[in-house]
Every structure is written in structure tokens, then in C-alpha cells.
Image 1: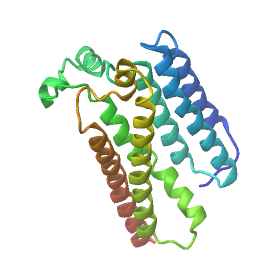
Image 2: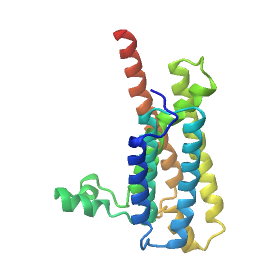
Image 3: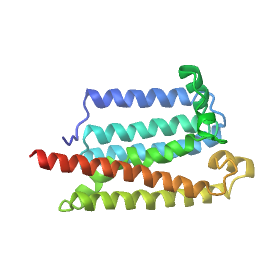
Length: 213
């Protein structure tokens, strides 16, 4: 169900986001780089609020969008490259994820790019539904995947443009390449995979719903 008015459940989601932002703003690893990352958070939050009022969003789209921002905010606090997810997993589950997966780098940034394609899929789909109301389910899926691919490429270009104007150390802190020359390509691929996975789920649910009717 599409909604254009904020309710108590939206207030709860916003409170969680605000609490995450406040906590993440306490002693981040590098404040200038942290603020640079959070400029994107502010832009995305403005876009969410505008679209919510303009075209309406269901609560799933709204929640997933905020979920992505929370993941991004946590990453910004640790400059992405230093998010201690493996230590958290060891402490909670007694399991060394990095060793088990043979990962030699911090993979949190890969998670964020996958989440971009997966968690923002419903939001992007709603944008296209409002723009092209006669589009079929398959056409909407195709458009969303294309948008994720194009916007991922644009983000990497913007990230590159910002990095070349920073010192080598600051550029590494902001980019978080961790020595991987194919970092941008892998990030774009994971965002695409995230959108394709959600598209597959979405199409199956749509087909099931049609059969049920």
C-alpha cells in the first residue's frame, strides 16, 4: 500500500536512523572523510522525503531505503575499510568469517554495494512505476537493473574525481580500494547482482500473485 503521510512506524525508522547517525558521529576514524561520506547520506535522505511526499512509497521501500542508509553510516564511521565485522562475528558467534572465506581484505564495502542494488530496488521500481504507469513487471525490472548499473558507474566516476583532488592518503581513506585495482569494477558488479537477485524474487512473487488471483 502506497503512503504519503508519515505515521508512527515511520517515526520509529527515523529514530533508529538518527540514533545510528549520532553514535557514528562520535569519534569517527577521520572526521573530514566521514563528513564527505555523510554528504551523500543527506542528499539521499532529501531524495527519499521528496519522493515519499510526491509519489508515495510503501513501507517496505521506505524501510529498505533507510536500512541502506544505516549500513552506509556505519561504513562511513570506519572509513569502510576498517569496519570490524569479523571481530563482531567472532565475538558473537565464535566464527572467523574472513578466514573461512579466504578473504585477505575487509569486505564491508562489497556488502554496501550489493545492498545498494538489493535494498534500493523497491524504491527505484516505484520511481519507474510513477513515470511509466503502463510498464509491465518485466520492463520495470529491466529499467531498475539498468538504473543501478548506470548510477553505480556514475558514483565510481564521482568517487574517482573527488579522489584525484585529495592527497594519496586521504584518497585511499575515501575510496577504500585496499590495493585492489579492480575495486570499482567489482563494486559495480555487486550492485548489479544485488538488483538482479531482488528482481528475480520480485518477478517470482508477481507471478505467484497472478496465479493466486
